[in-house]
Length: 213
Ligand SMILES: NC(=O)c1ccc[n+]([C@@H]2O[C@H](COP(=O)([O-])OP(=O)(O)OC[C@H]3O[C@@H](n4cnc5c(N)ncnc54)[C@H](OP(=O)(O)O)[C@@H]3O)[C@@H](O)[C@H]2O)c1
Image (tube, rainbow, N blue to C red; front, side, top):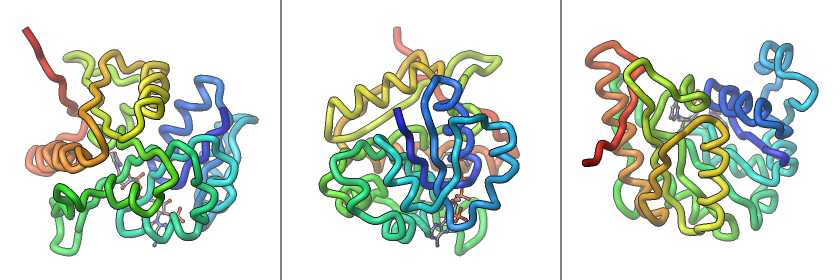
């Protein structure tokens, strides 16, 4: 498949590597493609860099991996028509760094990033996923103490099944579907637990697992 990724940071690049490794074509979108020169050197023939609009137009599936402050602008630059009828995987966390670190969460039920993105793109199938873990274990998520779980949310069950299949191909053994896109708030608050733990303990390679009897 063709995957369009909006976001040139760690998340965009790590997910791109996962899609490339599992046989897909990837175009990463950015306002400044020189940021991707190093990534392109090792990424292989199926990797391309371009503008946000080029990446969104290229993707059968679009990954949103922009800083929250830039997400609405990135979507506008990408052109809303390029998202129509597509699965959009929302990896963003709506973080407010204006008062320093740890950041504050700018989210609530009804106002989560996932719901806001779904409202900006009513003709797309938005799936919140991968926002609760570090970019560096989005692919091959194996830690010394075990394999974490991935939690996702979205309105469209076929879109969620597609994202679950990608996640499994990246090595996720357990993917939990927590419900419709309104549950994005829980996923964003869950990410805050990860972030606050990280700042408090200066530890950045942790992840969560749901244990059941
Ligand atoms: N880092 C992690 O481990 C992690 C884990 C889970 C979720 N997340 C979330 O995933 C998202 C991406 O994180 P990241 O660490 O990879 O990168 P980031 O530094 O948060 O975001 C980088 C991207 O945001 C774009 N951007 C910033 N301001 C913009 C603006 N005004 N208009 C348009 N685009 C703008 C940049 O565009 P240019 O390329 O044009 O500069 C770049 O592509 C964030 O929402 C983050 O909270 C991160």
